[in-house]
Length: 270
Image (cartoon, rainbow, N blue to C red; front, side):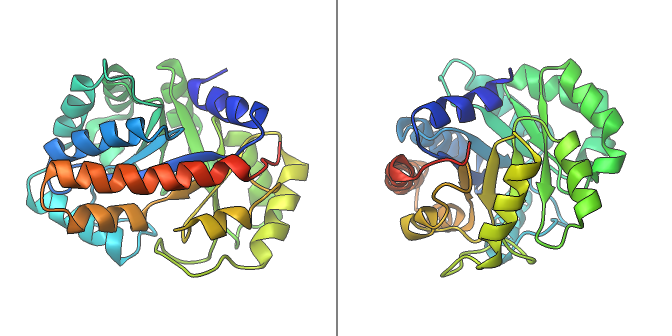
């Protein structure tokens, strides 16, 4: 059982959902990223999604796109992200997953990237532009280094492709709540609940919902139909408004603690 899957199992046994925040690496510096990662640890989040900035992001809305631009303009590199993570290996962080474009992995080399990610302390990869039917080689490489490869399912995914994705995903299944880009939304689409119920019939894998979730009220809408929630834009915006690494860490920690408390009363689907 992978460390990521174990987190969802532990949360389910505690009769609650898991909470996974997203932050951008290097926005605006690795010093800030490191401080926020430790703040999220202190907020007792279950997992963390760490975005690798990319000039042509996949499905990311304006808030996260802007954070990628800030990080790239500040000179962030893949090696700088790995170095920062390496420096935090003794900080008792929860499992961290890299949200990374396959274009970045391809440039580094699949074997080298997986090895560096594992050595730096990552527990898994989320590769939004790697289709399930083309992921066999990368998934095998990642698995050989102890990394999960999480697949994404969108509302527009066909039934045949859904099963293919479910079979390929490890750790959990990333359920995209809307047919669009990331960003804060006031409410979740009504059809999402039906989609999650159908997915639960098709797999025993944990189901985590992302895109558009920003507050406790939306978390409660997922009672009994999902196993985790992923929040990105709301947190990235807090980091953008902060005036120092310490201020960013405090703001994100306090927000994450509120969201972490919110999942305590929400039943998982497993």
